[in-house]
Length: 194
Image (cartoon, rainbow, N blue to C red; front, side, top):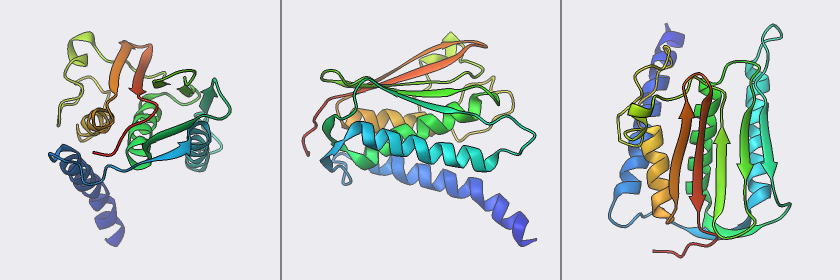
């Protein structure tokens, strides 16, 4: 009985966490906005390695593991961004890319950092998003209709969009049905505190 309660509470906690993050981001002056200098490729490499460990731990010997590929044009690249917001952006996008990609298909996080701004294309091999639904993807509580039984809260992309906007960036999506999607987050090299 305790196990069933815990399993039922998991999705509810996720919704509450997403709502809390969204509320903080949409306040007139984001209280949690705190840019600092750090090495971007190192941050992305560590984040990707953490995801790969989780993927490896959740795959049984009978199933093919998903592989997370990190590609960077540079070995070292200092930036001044909000670490927490960047982690929200990349964690959300990688989680979704993994969620929608079939087993055995790679998910790729790329870092394009040869000039200002920095760009993070995240590519999956999933089901794709119909063109008619792409313009509403970043609306709170909106989810694409043909997700083949994969559930979600409809808040993730709204949170990502707000985290990108707060830092003066942009986000765009390129997607083809049955061929996957690439979400491209573009952020300035340096953001100033509000």
